[in-house]
Length: 457
Image (cartoon, rainbow, N blue to C red):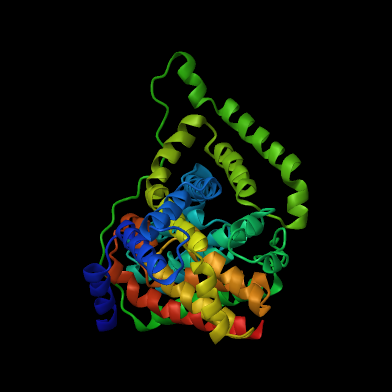
């Protein structure tokens, strides 16, 4: 498709790596802060650089970065466990044509991504690959790129799910208040809640309705596309799961391969989780630490021994390099915007052009645009979150709705921005141009659903 080739060319020719974009955004923010904000000292440049350095090493935000890394890593580690390997292989054997394949892959991928975005991303990629291998072995005609696109659909709903960066952070007691300290006036700060639990965001009836609509609509659209597109030619080797047998071991090394010790420790972690977080579960106050603790215990339990678990961690941690090195730069940008007063200036602009009805729509659209340049929900919350909170409080827009508008906008343009598709492309051996025609159509479907939802709900 010409449109897809044009978009792919634009991304390759004019959009540098996410790290370079983070550097350019940093420089742009420094220039804007110098030009449009009032300096408290004689040397405005050094003052802004000081704001930037303070933001880069913000202790609270560095903890946030590590929490997001663990969410990705532990989700990936779960997919590499033998029980999920078995589930993926069993599911892949139930397809008979492209239509049944895309329905199966898209539904299971979106459900997994709702639980954990790292889990959904890798699960969808491996399931799409295994479906292709099954079709190849049994001579089933298959549009493999369409199946690959179905395996990426989790990234269009993840931020509205349990591991969504913005909703999970605002569920932490005191996060919003500390986030807005030094930005908002005392009058506005008095309106800031201690926390916003999942019953007002992720598990709100309107968010669950939008998720259910997409869980039905996306597979139907993909199935329709399977009827009007042709099967493709592809050649795949069997994807190797992380299932190495025990080699010659001796001495204390045997503990690394002990199923008894691994399972026992996994159970201990899950018992501790239930004891420590039972009240949080009942009140739907799900925090990053709570989610990561549960996934850590479950991952060790499913891998059965520490050797398998650590091999899976070694494989999964490769995908966290972007978060590790880019997040401090985003925190530096937030430091500049916060200390220089840019957040208030930008939020005042939105307040001047929006009202209670249109602000969520503006937030959704702007979040989608920002995601193209900052392809990270956590990084985007660090940069755009204060603006959204400040604008919503000034216009009287419910904070849960404003936060979810940001989440919806951030996730939907993942269908256009190929950054998080890289793991899927590596596993499926597809190229961005193969899946983009289909993900772009799904993006338009998702945008329609989210905008309508923000207007109605």
